[in-house]
Length: 495
Length: 95
Image (cartoon, rainbow over all chains, first blue to last red):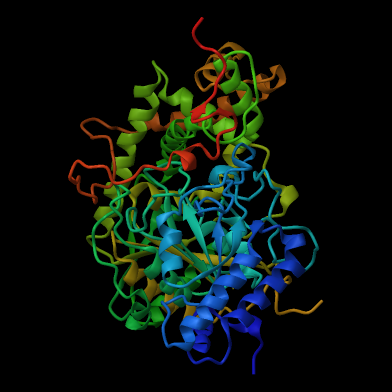
């Protein structure tokens, strides 16, 4: 019999329903793992063990009566960007260091309604701005993976780095993430787990602290796509409180796993063979094509001609929106305040003290590209290029069903290998940003290790609201790759 | 090209972020290199292209004009850094 830390979300759900294990046992085992390992990983900002035990008791009572939703008794972690009623929500920023929301985000409310047990709030880059989880005001998150020849601390990716590390290390069975330009997919790839960025409008943004509203999208992160499918089905759905929420039925995503890929047309965007891409990543991508071809799919080369403009367009659009969204943190109605004799002085002092370096840099660039005299040259032009990027995808999907690419141009790097040039850092997101710009769904699935022993992910990008085909194709890769490696730091490994 | 101190200070003023003099210099360099990098968008021919406003998937909707939320004054005020009774307080703005 395998141990309690070998459960996936799906197998734990089945064991709970069959009463082979209680929700209290399962929750206690995860709380214990957090106590043992999170001093090192720093994946949690706020832990809620008492609430979790209460929720687990309630789950057991429901399960004993044969009741309970699809996630009844399942221990999850919540990215600290989702407002949770009565539980501190910080966005990993000093400026929200003591913010306690008086309401619940729609995504977390959906998960609670289905019986999930929340173990706490997970670390992230400050306001979800970063690709390495090095910008959190609560300290960096450590990737539970190690290179085979070194003990260097690796980054878990970002911005959902705490979510990724906690799932990979077995501290939670699943987690929520948010993805603005790759913040679910890139950390999933860096930590050897699966993550889905759904179609823009699939999950409500209500109660999720905004970074770039036209791009932000919540999604699941878990050890495999079956677990992600179960979570997504709970998180997704129409919400009248989000004007960009789309009123379309939520399918049974778990059922899509079994569809297979026979006859599926898989596009390979030729522009994703970027200059300077390591041969290892190129070979890994080829391996992914072979797996899908062997499973019955047809591999087709496609062109997304505006790919190289994805990142610069993203940094204009996202930063412009961020500068506008983050204007609300002014030290008046909530958040940290630094007193000053004048109102403007209070704003300037509160924001100077409350925001970290990367957030300030992004707000300032966003302010610059929106300012009088620059708006047309930067912001308006970027929004037009964004149209062209979206058209590239729509045209490609006339001919193919999904696109296959690497998730990131490298595996996880060490915390002290962070590039000093911000533009170099942004290149981490080169393969994930274009799908975000277009609003189409995408996922990352773990599919191998690099030469140094750290995980690599493959990305699949699909048509609007066709997460099911993505899940089917992703599952074919999972079956072929048979990725069962575990990180060095894992709840199931005794010290 | 680095943004000069005057420009950085003007942008910081618009964004209401107080900067220390040494920050003005570093941010000027960082912002300059990011601005140089996004300049490549000038190569793209955008003649006749409409700006993308959203994905167009969500349809504008109307609802009955009635209050759906509210009557929660204390909740709204609960996170105020400083307050007096049912009011947020700020430094005096009118002489």
